[in-house]
Amino acid sequence: MHRQIPPATVQRLPIYLRCLNESGSETISSETLAELARVNSAKVRKDLSFLGSYGTRGVGYDVDHLVYQIGRELGLTKDWAVCIVGIGNLGRALAQYRGFGERGFAVLGLFDSDPAKIGKKVGGRTIEPLSRFKRAVKDRQLSIGVITTPAASAQEVADQMVAAGITSILNFAPTVLSKPDNVDVRRVDLSTELQICSFYLARSRGKQAS
Amino acid sequence: MHRQIPPATVQRLPIYLRCLNESGSETISSETLAELARVNSAKVRKDLSFLGSYGTRGVGYDVDHLVYQIGRELGLTKDWAVCIVGIGNLGRALAQYRGFGERGFAVLGLFDSDPAKIGKKVGGRTIEPLSRFKRAVKDRQLSIGVITTPAASAQEVADQMVAAGITSILNFAPTVLSKPDNVDVRRVDLSTELQICSFYLARSRGKQAS
DNA sequence: AATTGTGAAATCATTCACAGCC
DNA sequence: GGCTGTGAATGATTTCACAATT
Image (cartoon, rainbow over all chains, first blue to last red):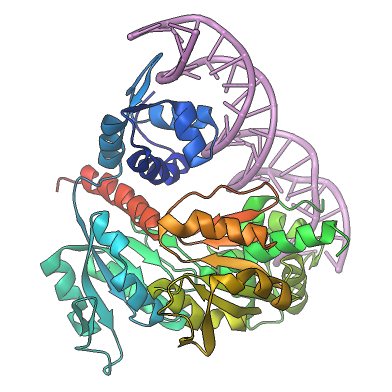
């Protein structure tokens, strides 16, 4: 097997990567990795087989080599520059989150439309006005845009990102964005997640007499 | 058709709900709702058919009635009490996020293990020590636990939540949690999302000559 | 003996296409 | 004529099960 990795597999690669980084040992079997990632071992083997045949029958996978291959497949050999638009509570929290830098994502731009915020510093970076956005994308090669504005401004911000040439967007605003086909938008929606929690809660509460 | 709603459908119900709330009109066709939610209209009809037959052929769906039915199915007729453990940048941001209250999720507990934080107020609530956690879950009927601790403490916190009787957990810590079968854990992992962005970016960059 | 890699089977999700109803 | 509800068709994902390899 090889190439054209299915989306379901792409979603799991970062998890494997994290489990491998924590594993400690030299080699690892699909069975062990599956336990760490809490998935079926056949799934691990099939997922990894999309990257190529990097395992050794009877032995398992070489952890370092696998970490390298997954990282390469995920495009992590290069550092990506990230910008955050909308520096409210959530934007500020993300701007200060160390996990990004550790994993090769450099936050190189903070933007907000509120004049009161412009010039303030968050996590060592100065908040800039949106008028500088397009220029900054070019100059700093910003490639991933994070939207943490209120829902009402999210589409407008997304349009500006697309116009500036950004093709990868992480949207925390509770809204569905329109976008051209070549742009990839990932949605992280906190209330949606809570509502899904609610569904499963309500269902299990319904079962018991309570 | 009816009952036992598939997970893929459950994931979309909150999106439909949001689109309906913004729609304004009295009735809506599957075609229009599909455009708003950016999905296929057959998918909308099939999803809604799991809730029962609430549409009228030739007309569409009554918006208010549909909002009610989806809300009921998602268990939103009841307010759920939420607690947040780990009041760092992200925990603080979530504690102050208004979207929760608006959608019927009341944040009724903030906990942290750092003595320096105990007693401080965030969004009108006081941060409490974990020693009070179990008691608070009982007394305030906390039903959804949000974990915003560092990865290293997440499993311990999850165990405490489970021990206190919480069956629904939203985990923002970058780690996979062990849990009994009756507990539902949803993972929201920011670095994972960025890594997936990276994959699609790298892939599209590879295509062009750049 | 242990473990991978992968066809084949089973399951789940999406989309088509149209009969049935308003 | 317009639109829902849903079987049937298609496509994607997961899981099984085992031959191939070390």
